Length: 405
Image (cartoon, rainbow, N blue to C red; front, side, top):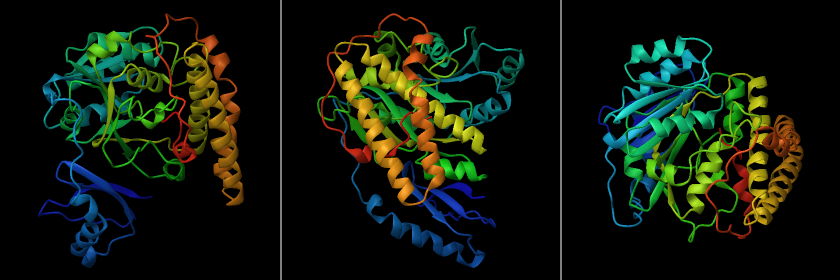
């Protein structure tokens, strides 16, 4: 077991937690996240000196200038955020998520729970006890619930997180700060482990987890073409959109994600469409949520299989659009060659047999993507995409788990 914790190097009263297990610390300097570091068990006499070690480790980040904004600044007030949690029959997880959201400082304008195809009244009771808004989406499907969320939201910015996510106290402020200007249509944030209690959770982190780095990045279509790789932008458990942008693009595609045959990909599709429509997408690492990863290996294997189906279904959607068909087919080939072939051979050379097994399972599941999209039924076309970049893909960028969550 590894204990996860947050530490702030600008806090004069700072000391690492005193525990008998190894530590993984998320290191901050006030409102700015610097990075993560793993430490062995800390002897009590060593605690005062750990700060010096961390100051040395993150010295370059402490002196680095803040990246410039895009467009003319147009501040988003945290009070204009509607935080939406889509859930289905997972009340124990939901209680924890709401507990953290209610502790946000400053608070968002509202917290809204979308109960997706509930089988009992249990979620309604949990939400009533928390004192937040509650709506029902009777038809199963995460993207359907997401659409109900933004259509029901009162705020100008709709923030999505999950019932198995735990928001950092400054989450709302950091998300709002990510909207650097009027041209920013979406903001994503850092996702790190909420717990590392089991071997499966450690393995998922070893595979890359959900993190996208500790540097703020501003993605703009004409400057940073990403092709059909929206996993570079962020993941669904930590993403926010201007409500008007969601309306402009017709919302989420209900054929995609959990609760449908495609098993995922709705977050990828929405981020891709926002980006390709010309809006900037900002990755703001100081907008932090912690995610409760699958605790056992069967759950982890199922997640990786779902990732394979989901990304394949996402590509199948855009293979069916004339403007993007060639780029989507190319992205599929690159995914299999550079991730499932080169990645698999590399894992075998290093005798990383479990990693090799996961890659095989994801690749095998990917063959189901096209059929899964067909099985999900018909849907009105998404807002049109003019074209997609043909920029060659850097193979190193396929080191992330493609479908993210």
